[in-house]
Length: 154
Ligand SMILES: [Zn+2]
Image 1 (cartoon, helix red, strand yellow):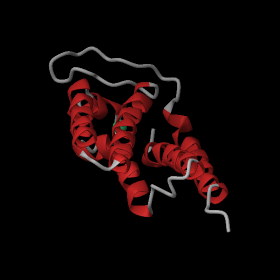
Image 2: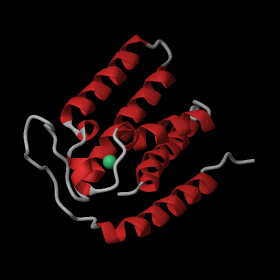
Image 3: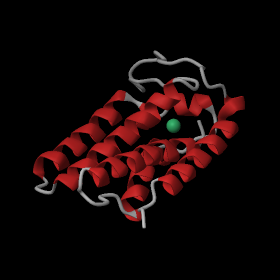
């Protein structure tokens, strides 16, 4: 998958979470900066190991289980040490965004979860490269529509 899909899907989830929080009386916990943070974690595996081709992604430590565990532990530490519940929500969303990226790459060519220690590839090609641009356009439009629909009522 390309960058926009990896960025937009977790941001769309954050928009939905923000709407639920607002309806529960918690205001709008997500700001433009925290949406950007969630989007950044959605693309972080590719930023940590930039690549153009599938074989380069397969040789990426940032798409492996140790990286996912490290990000999850970091998020867990933040969640456990923050007194403000909203910081825990941001940390959770960032961890989910990172994991969703790796999961998305698993269904669009695969990952090597234990690189460099094992050549085993996990994944399939449910979303072939020919559909990635279409998916980028659709997820971007979907996320923009969500922002429009979920805007604060006047
Ligand atoms: Zn990736």
